[in-house]
Length: 252
Image 1 (cartoon, rainbow, N blue to C red):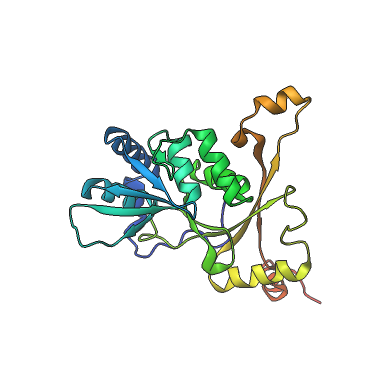
Image 2 (cartoon, rainbow, N blue to C red):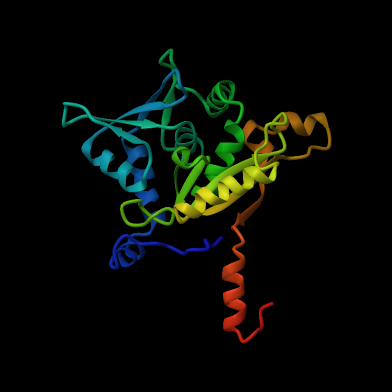
């Protein structure tokens, strides 16, 4: 996928820094660090998870853009607040983080999935979209301040501005889908245009099953799939006329 503006690096040399340190390699190092330390996070009431980290692990989490660091007075121990999608991705997709429930016992993937879904019915669609983008080595962060689900960065946010504002749509939403009316689309496009981002819509649906046995064999995260990702831009007539005129065409 390509944005309409392209990457906007915060300094000329940052593109070279990113190329020399690909996000895939940074994620691999984080995965190894979490696995070697047998890291465990505690699930909180709001579906976030709290992870205690050493300075070395803290650096890896920051470089890979996972979680939000919580400032403490103890310099030897640092805490990170992981969002629901981040927690499940590290636990299930990367197999490098143990999540403990409120009772202190480790949760398996099915238990964690069911817990997340019980607290947010949109979690399946949000997680599938999050994992889809992370799997393509995009850095994915909350898009709340822009009125979207996520924002996607080509590399670390300290090096480059986010390129995409991501909306996740699904047919399994009880009539609460966004972008169903023209005014919703116009509002989203105007906000994205004002902050130099491309609107990316990811459509997630449930997989069809031939019989009840197939449905029972599918685990929660296997029930959903990304079927489409589409970038939407605002059509500006003046720009189109200028492009046409520059090609030697006539305008009416």
